[in-house]
Length: 407
Image 1 (cartoon, rainbow, N blue to C red):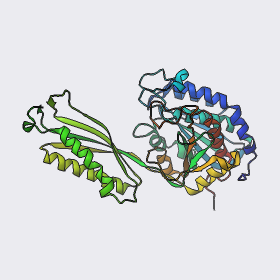
Image 2 (cartoon, rainbow, N blue to C red):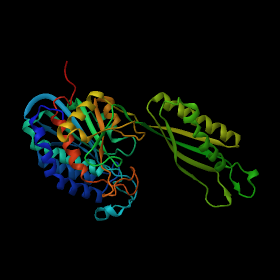
Image 3 (cartoon, rainbow, N blue to C red):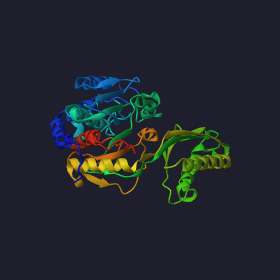
Image 4 (cartoon, rainbow, N blue to C red):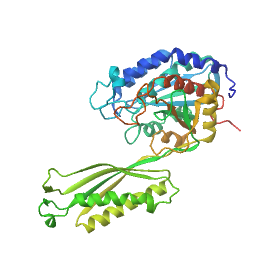
């Protein structure tokens, strides 16, 4: 077990246990009352009320989401930020394990764990407030809106200047993980999560009767060829050692069985770890669409949509995170991730401006029926994870090396 020179560490696990019931209650309230990106008004008001009662100074630099600031009793210029995302997904959910607290809002559901992230950081906020006498400098809690929708709430918070105003020196965040058991965290140095960019592609043909395809230019056939050809980009256009994913997530076109439509529309995503590869993939999609549509007698419209950068963890911040977890729970809490994740996270915007780290919080178990992938309608978390997550996030606030050390 690593030694951390702050007496707060001996009290943190017990406080996480003490507040576990309150975290569960909040998580289930948020799950029952989800609000999608840019509409988290009631969620924000509830958080502001809770944080104010704890003694935090709460700011709302944007219409939704909030920043909570606590000055420690030990005066210093040290400023650490901890982040949770608060928005829900625009989808409906399933799952008997959540029956007692399923979403009451049609078309909105916390099927990515943000309700747990929020409850987790509220738990950490309580712990930090209780141990304020041991806190050096200032902690800034970011309850962030709109992680699930471009341009990304993290980008807007950074651009608002609120973090710069408070002199933030490092930022940490987490995400629940159905692949890991409660009581564990997943860590990785360097590349952690991929760039997540999007594109739209329309294939415009010539409509006609299904019985006379020679008199039409069938965009469905062209679109089918394009989807197949796009899959060769990763295998034949990109260096094999460079991670890349190209996925078509939506295709729409046609109305009935005997009409060849005028247009087929596709939406997709490009996942890489550098801009050069992204640009190469995007150019190849354009060229494939151009060639196939021309050969099929049609035209095309292609639009690349810049999304989130890659999450690149700082090595020293991961070391601090590992020390924090080990000091609180022993080395068994740590799981080294074998490889980066091709999912995207707007936490990357913070790491473009501030050092820090992003980690996974184990939340998957058979007992809680919580081993479904992110964004699955049955997504759930084993709420035991909140004790681990709240303690570690609070522990980072008290770790003496969680911000860059002056030379």
